[in-house]
Length: 159
Image 1 (tube, helix red, strand yellow):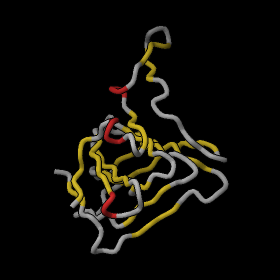
Image 2 (tube, helix red, strand yellow; image 1 turned 90 degrees about the horizontal axis):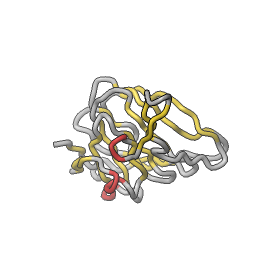
Image 3 (cartoon, rainbow, N blue to C red; image 1 turned 180 degrees about the vertical axis):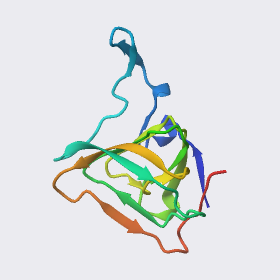
Image 4 (cartoon, one colour; image 1 turned 90 degrees about the vertical axis):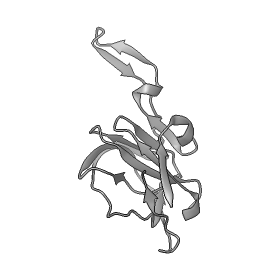
């Protein structure tokens, strides 16, 4: 069983960065009419370019079994929710079912998954949930996947 814990910057540090306004300094811009939360994450795009996309996620069938992980060795990948709904992140330091860690993100928290970090594809809890995604496009193989035997796939629980 894989239990999701609250997403915090310290707990997520081995896998990347938490993107949230509650963890960063800000300063005023635009004649004091806007706050800028500057450089919340740094995009890595080895030999490529940073692109912005919108991913529209739908829930995986319940109960969710973590049957696979993927990673992007040539670039980081950021997910920023566009609606204030909680969502899940599953990451691992190595491509093994037993190494998986799950985090429950608030609707005002995004993450930047570090280049080369194993992770499960987008896991949403709402019927549909949009994310602004900062990703890498360019030459080279930037997607690796590993699949787990059904008997090894951890079942994800959120409570």
